[in-house]
Image (cartoon, rainbow, N blue to C red; front, top):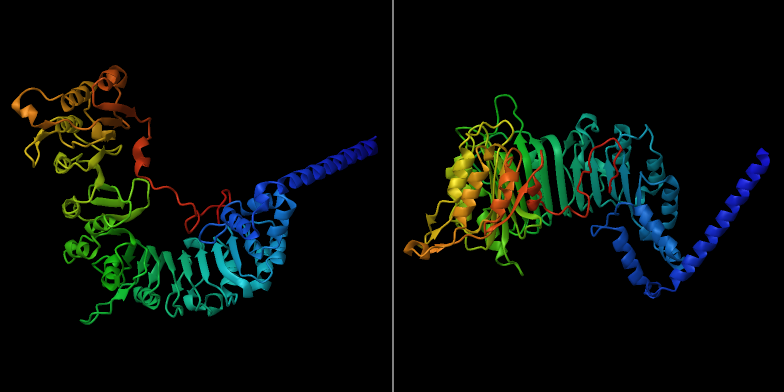
Length: 578
């Protein structure tokens, strides 16, 4: 009986396979008759490349699945893809080894782009690396992420004479042994165009022999020689992207009075300096931020997107005004936008949070920042005055200004808020606290009183504070003391129509407003919501659920279509575009 059942199962499987083959033949024959099948080969190859690869040339997520789907459309597409070696030149350790073998056979002798995503699932040996080593003469770009130490050593010791792109990333607690940057992959780095290194142990950055770098990205490293990094910059004047982040530099001993040559990076399009600091050695320590040292040595164009995050030392010998004077001013970036084709209004976000300040400029609300500055460690007045002066000088540039005030135990300073009350550019105002804030119970009531008290503009017209305000966000302790009746009184006063008095003739009604209440605010909503919404000028009321701040995404840039480097560090449970 068992034999007969097995024979029947085999027979059914055979019939199903034959049917599948007939269906595939039919579908491929039908697809071959579609108009797209008659496109020129070169155009089809271009379309396939867009489907498979990012503009940078790296393969997209689910690459093998995409390639397999394209091959299944028709016999002609299968043949075209099989005869295009560049489609087979991208292999990953996460691919099935059968696909890797097929890729090496079909890629011929074109340059190879390899991706080793270890996630610590490697053994002491790597079958993927074993397949790669016979083709080391073809390696053009190498991505090695989260490898075992012994596997990492085998990669960087391989001699790859044609290599142009190197991306290395490990974890600090399990990083490779000391490495000399000039000896990576056999040391033949004259053609190197991209170098990204994160957490790759102790690296000696001296002696890198290359002059064609377009991208330099160094992150999560200790005891770097800042002069060695500056030497790399000086040797690569065509650099387009420079990212230095979460680095600790060896202290620079005091130098004799001399002015080193300025390094011009005229082709730079992106400069990121985030959390750079000096290591303290013995009695010697630097009193100025590491970023300040870099700004004194490099020169770059104003159209380069700038990101700075730094800590300003609280040291009597440090003058924050001098540091701020060396940073490209927001004034320059806002003035530059006026020269951009089709520019309409800049989107500017400023956050005051005690001794922390951030300022972000975008060409439009959903575009990537062209200027991002975040600083901490100094008293608020220093940073505040710098921002005020910068924005005040830029009022000729059309902008939408989004202000956020977030304070701790002292609550909010309404003087800080009222400084901007006559600015027509303010469209978004957020006042937020945190769960442990001890903000006075009068803070919320005083804020509502401020928003409904007319003031005299420079033109001699009575206006409500923030006359162009479209969104008001009050979250947590910032709204302590706010009652429904107080909100109703505020909007009724703020949007009251002008009367017949002489003063009312010279007044202006503010633009319609949407009010957003966050955690800890708005428990009275059911009783007063309809009355508030009935006031002409109130466009809406939104109340966040617990631990939700629904307006946070209004300043969020769209995520990049290509994965950032390095990928997330994990244990292999999540997929990666790399």
